[in-house]
Image 1 (cartoon, rainbow, N blue to C red):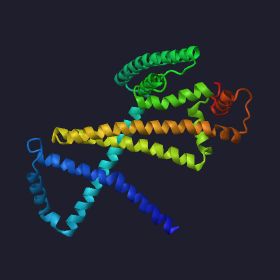
Image 2: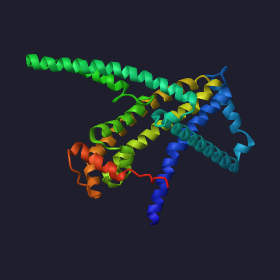
Image 3: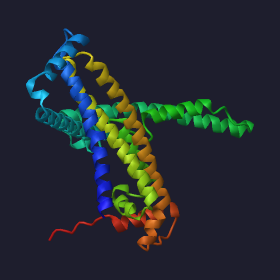
Image 4: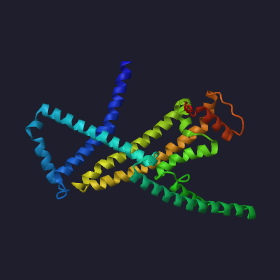
Length: 311
C-alpha cells in the first residue's frame, strides 16, 4: 500500500509540474519581460539581463531563506497561473461546444443565432450541390453502366463536412460535430444518447472506456491551451512580442480542439454501435421489430426518466 501511495504521489507531482508549473513559469517569464521592457524597449536584451541581475543581487535574494521564499512564491504564482489557464480553458471549451447556447445572455444568444443561420445557409447550399452530384453519378451508372469519376463527389462531400456533418444547430463546427452524433443516433437508431450514455458507459469494457477518456482529456488539454492564449493576450498591451505568441497559441488550440472533438465524436458513435446490444442484454431487453430502430426505442423507453403527474 505504501508503494502504491508513493507512486500515486509521484504521478500527481509530475502532472502538477507538467500541466501547471512549467507553463505557468513560462507565462511568468513573459510577464516579467513585458513589465521590464515595455513597448519602447521590447527587444532590448541587455536591459532585461541588467534588470534581472539587479534583482538577483538584492540582499533578500542572496540568502538561503530568501531564495527558498522566492522559489516558493514563483512556484505558487506559476501554479496559480496554470489554474487560471485551465479555468479559462474550461470556459473556452464550453463556449466552443455551445451545447447550451440557447440559454446564453441575450446579446450572445443573438450573435449565436445569427451564426447558426449563416452556417445553415452554407450547409444547405453545399448539401444541395452534393446530392445533385450523387444523382448525376447514379444516372450515369444506370444509363452507361460505368461509374463516374468520384473526384467531384468527394470534393463536395469534404466541403460539406467542413461546414458540418449534419444540418447545423450550433454556432461552431466543434459543437455541431458532437451534435451530429446525437442526431444520427436518434434518426437512424432511435437512440436518445443523453439518456442512454450514462448507462452504456457502465457496461463498456475497460479498453473502450480508456479510449473515450483519452479523447476527452485531449479535448480538455486543447481547451487549456486556448486558456493560455487568453492569458497571454492582455500582455500585448505592454509588450508587443507577446502578440505572436498569443496568436500562435490560438491557432494551435483551434486546430487541436477541432481534431480532439472529431476523435471524441467518432469514439462516442462507435461505442454506441458496438456495445448497445450489451446494454440491452444487461437490462434483459429483447425488442421486437426491426433491429435498427426497435432496440433504440426499447432502451430509450426503459431509461428515460418519467415525471410524476401533478396531484
